[in-house]
Image (cartoon, rainbow, N blue to C red; front, side, top):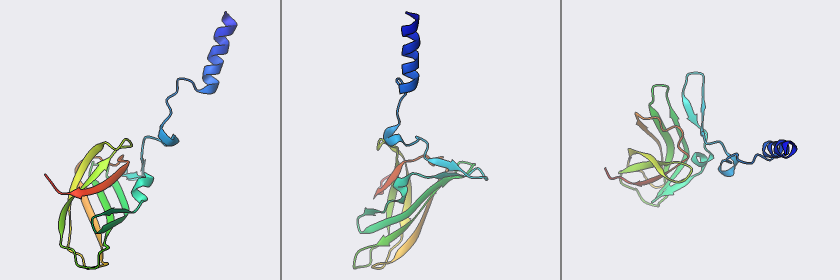
Length: 140
């Protein structure tokens, strides 16, 4: 009986039974912290180019200072053949399951056809661990 128990313990340790696996073998923490204490998001989803209406959103980054101020930056390009009027939008931040974590309201100024602007939005909340984002029409 003792040998069976020892064998079962060894098998559990060797096979990892009972250990919860993370999705895609990725860590749940999407941040690294630099020397100044700023949390920098390293989720690969932020590096993917996204579209919203006639806009192309690229080079998105999100980081949070040690004081808790989160900054979202990205390049926004008007991909249409005409000028697009300025618009209020919500940047929706989501977790790995696609659940909304928070949103940041911001303004995209009017852009000529093909013009790119640097978008910079912030909020006094630590959202550095967001997994992904998308844009949607502004509503309070």
